Picture 1 (cartoon, helix red, strand yellow):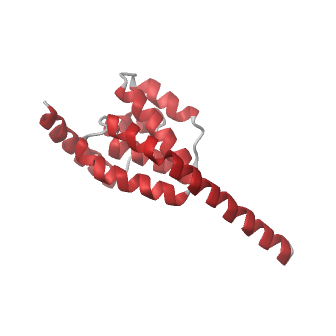
Picture 2: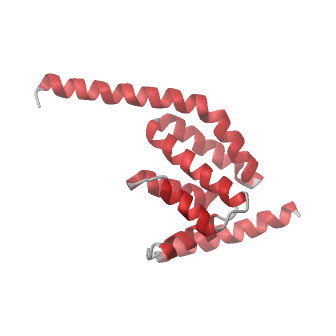
Picture 3: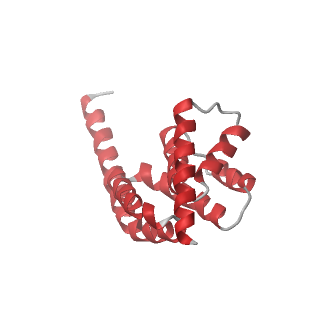
Amino acid sequence: MTEEEKKEEIRKIDEEQAQGRKLAGIKSNAWLKRGFDIIYPERQEYYTETVGQVVKSGFYGIECLDAALDVMECIEGGASMEDAIELFDSKGLDGPIYMNAQKLILNFSKQGPEFDEAYNEKHDIKISDSRKEAIERIKEENRSFAGKQL
């Protein structure tokens, strides 16, 4: 690759990222509303910060957050974990986008820990001890938050 070709490739990447940040900025209010409709109020501040990070990241965060919200809405709408897993798998995510979407579901969905466990079990993924601890901590928080809503 010539020096000129490298510069052109960098310019294209920079342009794509700028377009992604612009689109993410447009979508941010919708993401906030969608999230606020389905997450515990105690997590709204952290969720708002997360959406802000997605806006800064551009295209990569858009796909991740859209997928996570679709799955969270599916779960909160009463779908089975099997249906939610099927929806998540249908998104075709891979690498960091897949991992970040799964993390968003775990941290923000009212049934995120249960989804995470079911997903990993279905796909025969071994859960590390630190992840098991995080899942249990989030389950406890969710029980606490659910009790406040009663």
